[in-house]
Amino acid sequence: MSDQPTKLIEKSETVSMRQDLMVLTKVRLNVFVLITTLFGFLLASKSIAGGFSFGMLDYWKLFHTLLGTAASAFGAAAFNQLMEIEQDKQMGRTKNRPLPSERMSVTTAFIIGWVLSAFGVIHLGNTVNVESAYIAAATIAIYVFAYTPMKRQHSANTLVGAIPGATPPMIGWAAAGGTWYAWESWYLFAILFFWQLPHFVAINWFCREQYEDAGYKMWSNGDVSGKKTAKLALIYSFVLALLAPIACLPGVEMATWPWGIGGFLAGAYMCKLSVDFGRIGDRKSSRKLFFFTLLYLPLALTLLTLSWN
Ligand code: HEM
Ligand SMILES: CC(C)=CCC/C(C)=C/CC/C(C)=C/COP(=O)(O)OP(=O)(O)O
Image (tube, rainbow, N blue to C red; front, side):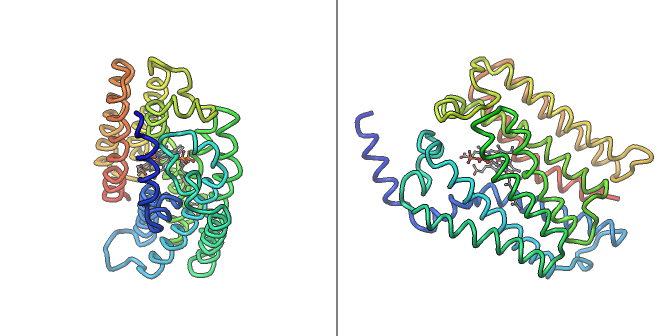
């Protein structure tokens, strides 16, 4: 115990500028965000062309879409961390980030946030289309001005945070020439929205003491047994599971039954992991649910693309 502070100092001194930039911009999380944008782009391209082949994709437009979305998401992450320096100092998970550990100045992070988010939105508007730029701008605004301050005010913050997490596939959809208000675009939003809730409540529970100490108002605060959190994970996983067959019903026909059945089974497995977590109520079972959510996303989006009409 006694050598812990020294270890922390040593650790913080050995972090490179490149690593700090990656943490400030939440690169690992945002790589997944970009995967969802990519799938939005692929699905709209498939719908517009009436079928899929790698030759039909506009790779140049795809490149600019991912570049603009990445810059927007990286910039938004920098703003989010600028607003949470004091809270991040109090959480083991976040205290070694560049701002709370004072390896990066507020001014530097502020400039990075502005440059990246402004470049991202303007780049989408100039090289892709205005719809994708508007969605990216709205995503940044909701994440920074609604979700981030709300984390300290009300536990419904997670529902608000799930909105910016669910719009990136809509950016991809609009970028490829789909209309943002099409049913298919909102369907992708719904999948991402409901996916995020079990994804996040699992982390929220296994880090709940940290969230409580930092003053965040979260669903898992005080839920020692994990039963309340697991119930929420189960409800949202169940809705996620149902979304798969709904896309294949007569009259809807967005996708074919391989997605309807495969997506349902993947969602049902998430329900099982939520039930296990509620029954066992330990960190291991909540981590298992969290890791499965990470596996679910690329697998489900690939199956959906293969089954897309
Ligand atoms: C309500 C919305 C969301 C919340 C509150 C949330 C929160 C979190 C948190 C707290 C972590 C743990 C990071 C750490 O270990 O320090 C995490 C990890 C992760 N999240 Fe989410 N997340 C949300 C949405 C998303 C979305 C939309 C994506 C991508 C599509 C995503 C992808 C990931 C990935 C890939 C990780 C693991 C990588 C890492 O630990 O950096 N999350 N999330
Ligand atoms: C195009 C564009 C702008 C995309 C952005 C995508 C985006 C903002 C996703 C947000 C997901 C989310 C709420 C993460 C958790 O943040 P947190 O602040 O709760 O996580 P933390 O506690 O680790 O800081």
